[in-house]
Amino acid sequence: MRPDRIFNSHKTRLMRHQIPGSENLSVALIFVALIALVVWITTTRDNFDPTERDLPIELLGDNSAQIEIYNRPLKPWHEPGQPMAGAAFDLAPFPAATLDAEWQPVGRVKRFQPDNLYEKINGEAEKFIKQGFVGLAFLRLRSADDSSEIAIELFDQGSLGGSLGVFSDHAAGRAIEDREGVSFVTTGAGAIGRQGRYFFRIAGDRQSAAITAKAASLVAAFAQLGRGPGTTTTHEEIVPTGFALLSQRLGIAEADIQFQEGNVFQYDFAQRFWFAKAGIGADTRLFVHVADSAAAAEDLIAALTAEHRYEYDELEVDGAYRLFRHRYLGSFFAVARRRNYVYGVEASPDRAAIPTVLARISESLDDDES
Image (cartoon, rainbow, N blue to C red; front, side, top):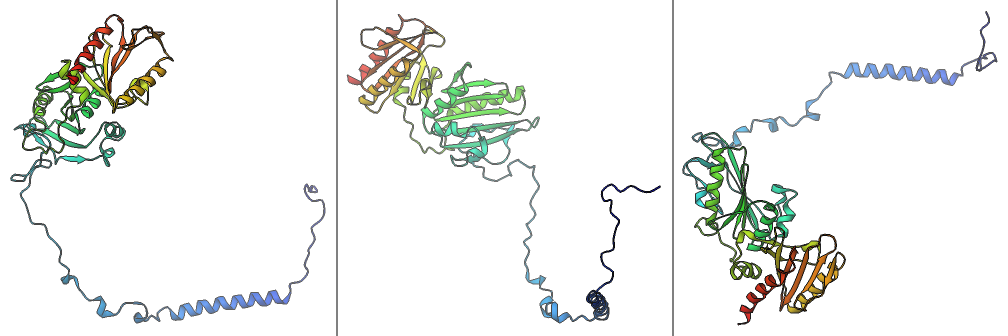
């Protein structure tokens, strides 16, 4: 059977009938060169002179006796993480009552500044820095009974306003307790609170009665923050004017006072406001802002009025304050100015109670003029 050609129907043809002599000569020369290379390698494989490639023999002498290796002296073994007997332990800024016979530190106190705070609380660092963060001291305690551990973060926020601002974010919606000047909220395995310019977080690695009891003792110990000999007082405790107005003049408990650094009322121009419970409703708060000057306070009133008109209806009043009612919620917002003070009430369900609250604040400001 004759095969069928699919791609080429023509017969194959031999294109060259003879090989040129130059090709034969080149093949012969390559063959001779390969033979010569094999012969050279075979005859010179043992022809090696160490002086051509190796270092001189005098440089290869044993000089190990001239190297002095440090051998650490032997010391008594101790439990890892436990302080060595007789070793000085720098506990500052924690008060001495932080430690007891059962709870001892696991390692040294670690300290962080604004430039490396992200290494400890990445994602939260900016929130603390905006509130005046100065330094963080971190300490871990371990129980000698069951090896449970407690981590303590002690933030120096530089001022009372800074610690109040951070604490208000953590304590929102929780029952705030007050013990010997320490405001705190309890958690399942610790506590969160503040005292003076300090804000702290206590977190155990489990829920147990021992950790709960130790957290309570730590809260009591932190009442001595900034007072004991083991602390370094580098910031003068200055009571902010807004806090003094709410706490000392109006008699509002410190646990009911909050501070917001920025974005107050969700306005980027409103900054550094003090808030406190107004005693009218659950969500009603009175607020105070101390401006740099009377002109700055007047500008802030104008900005608040302009922004509130988008969601509020401005009501007619006698001119002592501006009153607004929310178009959808029906709650009332009032704001007034006295010299460089901007104060008022937000989220009030009762319009009739607002003049009384504002008059109370205004009367406390009269003490400055007398």
